[in-house]
Amino acid sequence: MAGGATLIPSDDIDVDFSKVAALAQQVEERSSLMGAEHMRLACADLIQACRQMDKRK
Image 1 (cartoon, one colour):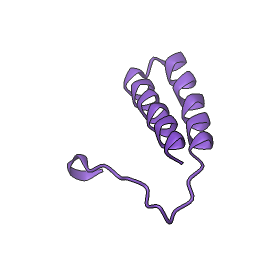
Image 2 (cartoon, rainbow, N blue to C red):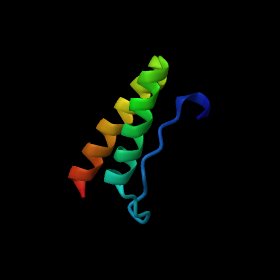
Image 3 (cartoon, rainbow, N blue to C red):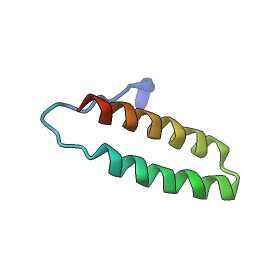
Image 4 (cartoon, rainbow, N blue to C red):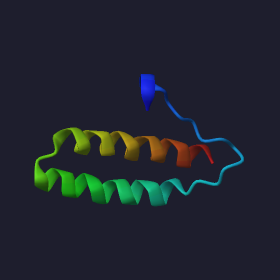
């Protein structure tokens, strides 16, 4: 995203945050195996954000 913009899902969009978190966890695990530390950290942040959004539902 240009300029460090953050996207917040709109209430009218149905996002399955548990599914997004599960996919991010798969990427996180594979990134760890490949030594892609920045990707692993980004996935960890995404997983945490998904869990927070899931609680808000």
